[in-house]
Amino acid sequence: MHSICKTLCLILLTISADCLYAETQSIQSIYQKYINTYSSLAVKKQKDYGIPASVTLAQGLLESNAGQSILAKNANNHFGIKCHDWNGSTVYHDDDKKQECFRKYAYAEESYNDHSLFLKDRSRYSELFKLNTKDYKGWAKGLQKCGYATDKAYANKLIKIIEEYELYRLDSTTDSKKTSDAKPAATPSKKDSQKALVTRTVQKMFGIPYVYAGNDDTFEKIAAETNMKAGNLKKINETPGDFPLQRGDIVYLDKKKKKADKPYYDHLVIIGESMHSIAQKYGVQVKSLYKLNGKKDNYIPAEGDVLKLR
Figure 1 (tube, rainbow, N blue to C red):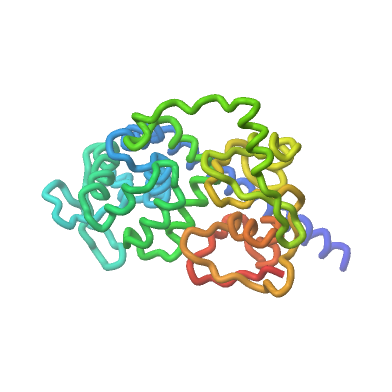
Figure 2: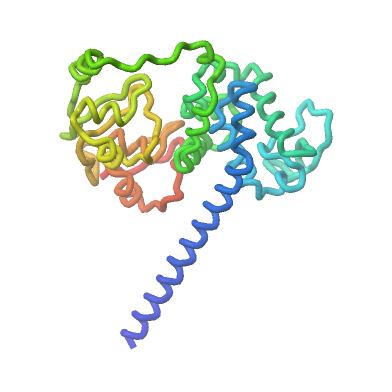
């Protein structure tokens, strides 16, 4: 009897795992289809208004549930923008309150354009336009701080979508107005490379050697200057192939740990943090951080969450 029960449990676990995998694949397929459909539109809006294409597309994915929401289907409203001072067509939908007024568009492109104008024309978002268009983390954090959404995990959700689907690639397909007149970067000479090698300071944290990324830094550049392979650096730091480094990012040169060193027992999540950025902060492997907290891969930390580090 015990053997039969054990066999049944294994069958059920296998079925459950298969269903979860199928569901994950389905969600990724829907997201990818949305990205393929609207990425060029997001890039166009970056050229027109200076809003990072990655941020616009991530907001569209999140707000419209990848085009599957009622508002997106019935009103071409991909960003959940309410009526406010709107004089165009409207639709009513339950949100924070019952039957709230939302803007209705004839085409999805109108929604994307209105979203850009919504941010550009409101003084509350003016500080965001001082940021570089490649600073998707700064934009995501700024949107939450400026009150675009009340969700305490809003910025972190945007960042996760951008990094998971590598939307930051879109921000490099067009130059921002700030950099359009800039001269092309000169190819570093052998002398410059030797100088960079001398000034790259290797430090240790939690017993793991690391360096800080500088402006316009890459894994390839760091690898060359530390006598390592770029592929190994990316694997150690758990990043995809073309992950964009930002000034001040920690780049480990050796394998991270399965739990944080004492006395780091827990971490209070703030706006703009991801499981990856938290793991980097304490020299912990991302998969271990999920495991320590009993979280699945789709978990997104919200401002105020407390995560176990060991």
